[in-house]
Image 1 (tube, one colour):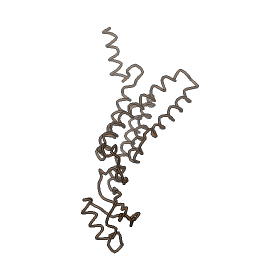
Image 2 (cartoon, helix red, strand yellow):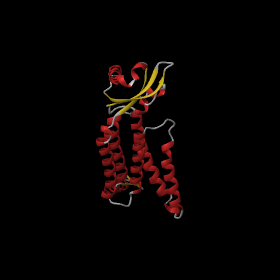
Image 3 (cartoon, rainbow, N blue to C red):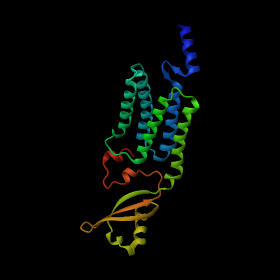
Image 4 (cartoon, rainbow, N blue to C red):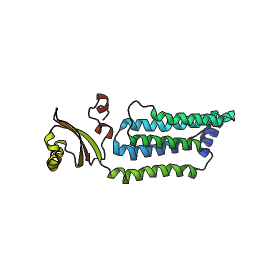
Length: 230
């Protein structure tokens, strides 16, 4: 028994194999997903619910693809069909949610799924060949976060009650009032629908805030289930 255990440990540390499972690929896949989620996504959004979702999706998709390939390995001609159907099902889960997912979170989910699939399929390539696409994906996301999203303005819809200030000649006074009442660093705003019966107007303000929740900012009425997650 000691000999078998020693042989198993030797195989594990020298080949990175745990039976049929390639632990090296799995650890690299999990590490890359964690780097992307923790240092790129969570640092800006502070959304623990998506942190939880992204990490588990990356792990589950890796094992799903990996075992799907090895289970179907002996079926010969059915392998290609099975993998195609499986991949179609994997990318179909992006529509499993009931609430609308913001574009940024959807992009992260798609990137994480792609990384997990690449790492699960990369059993016959070298370590460098597997690391290269992972580093390129993480690097591309980091560059987009640093140079594209950092300079963009967050938006918020506001129901405004002083309709008299929506006139073009009252632009400066309206801007000052919005800044004072919201406390936001507003860059500019757009005036939408005006309801003279209720003396209200819908104003879309553009302001500087890298931690803004765009899904909530675009809502006029917020459900209890939405603000409880913030």
